[in-house]
Amino acid sequence: MGSNRRERRFKLRGGVVSLDFVNTVGSRLTDPPSEYLRSYEDLLDWARQAGLLSPEETEGLSRQAMLDPEGARETLSRALALREALHRVISRAIAGESQDETDLSALNRELSVALSHLRVMPADGTYGWGWDWSGDDGGAPLDSPLWSVAKSAAELLASPKLGRVKLCAGEGCGWVFLDESRNGSRRWCDSRDCGNRERVRRHLARKRASDS
Image 1 (tube, rainbow, N blue to C red):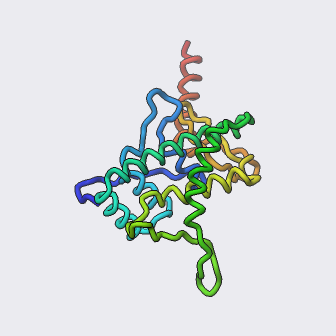
Image 2 (image 1 turned 90 degrees about the vertical axis):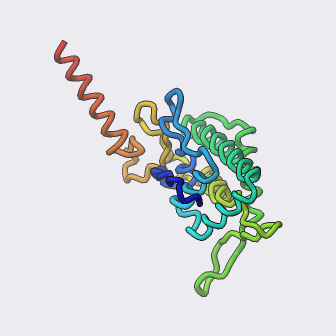
Image 3 (image 1 turned 60 degrees about the horizontal axis):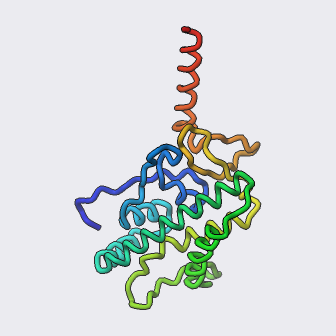
């Protein structure tokens, strides 16, 4: 990666990879929201921090992106389209609304690509799932970070855990997370962040009310 480039740091609060991916937009419900995936390198930073890529794999993809900038741009464009389709699917699921076929088709297209790379592989004397990285042209597959996202999203949508996905109650936040608290009472993507801001906001509102 370019040595003069500063790595973007991501907050992973979704609880599963696909929700962390949806949360690569800051203050989603404000106008305008903050885009965190502005380049293919940002996508690689996110994937490595989310545990989807090793440092070596990240380096290999970064080199491949320099050799194929058009392919890197196309992959970023696919990533953003997948993210927004996922956001709409998850939002409708939370609201109990029926799904838009277009968004499910967008997910299923990426899922179909991902599953074509999924293999059963030997792992420590047993077997496990793994990704086959051998690309047609011998280069590292630029879209490999999207494979785990699509698989994670499909698994979440098809599981009872979908009922535990919530929208952060922070004003303007719009982040989604899997509420795994025992009594299902989690309200914030992070109580130290959005939760704290909300507590300060309420305190100031009470103070203004008592002052007047």
